[in-house]
Image 1: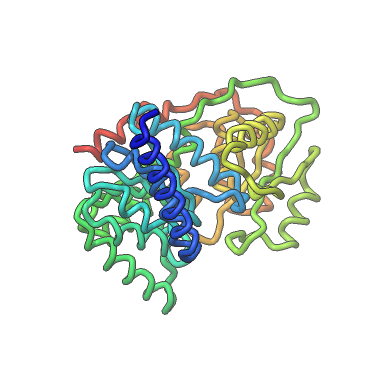
Image 2: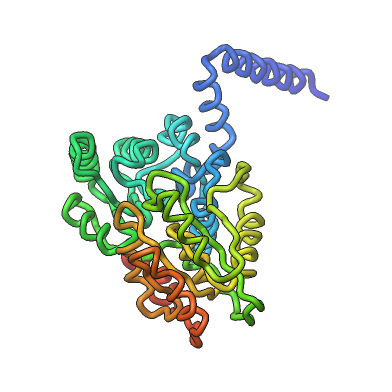
Length: 361
């Protein structure tokens, strides 16, 4: 081999080694951002999508991960061939310097759906604000959110902060996950494109109807947090008066949900719902899982409009029942068991397949 070529190769190797040593001497966050850039630099001049603020594995609510499964399928369907870079809530903040370099003004950003646009979900809301400020020239779509700011000094303060940041962006879309949230978005963020549509999990395939168990089985999918209105006395009253075998479940699981396990875990949970005859829930995704599995569902309210306003999406679903009082549940069980029709709307045709046309104009 030519001596000059050998010298050139050796020089390049030494140069790479020096670069790596210098990088490793930097603070860890800077080092990791540089390594992130080096890994993804091939995307710099390629049209791409940032799908940000998704649930990290340590966030164990299967509803959030079900949304991620549904949204990634939707992105693949409607933006074929465009690379999608997913960044969870932790990584979205940590790698923001690298993302700022990697993404060009013509690249799209989609922010994860959920129930955290407001002062109750400041972890997510603060990251959302940060991304909106960091990418002032990109098209940013905040996917369906339940919007809620409490009528407290803190709630009013946080509402003003979000208004200031959101309304300063030139190309922002805010989608409410229910009509009340859509109305709030329109009032609070007049500079953004605002409307409402259902939760993305309803874009997933629906199960076929199957015969009832004998005797029927009831699943209680109930919250264990400060959004529940059920007292321990209410819960005891509920379980003591139910005529059939009951099982308990919460959409917050015991173990972390890794990205590569999302679809498998979701299928396992949906199969579990499918094994019951009636679902009683105050969880939004408890309701949605019941509808996907075509199971009669008795819905209890929570402390805000998350469920009551969202019920508008299910007016054409004959097996969803809203329950005002816990004591009326036993009588509604017999109604639920007598339902004959399990038809559901085509949510993709009505909503999700139309979304690109609304946001890409």
